[in-house]
Image (cartoon, rainbow, N blue to C red; front, side, top):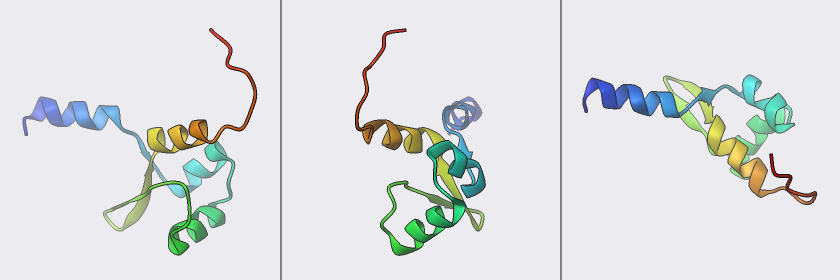
Length: 75
């Protein structure tokens, strides 16, 4: 893979820790951990160099898809 292609891929995705993700998705860190360990959480995760990371775009898409009501407003 060329160096420019590698930089392009990393620029498209942002991986965050449990502590960073928790307030964004409205869950406690401990809840994210339990969901992950029990295999029943909605958010996919990645093991990177011994730590757990979440793709922020994937998690936000899951939150968007599970929206229950309200209206869409055009910007």
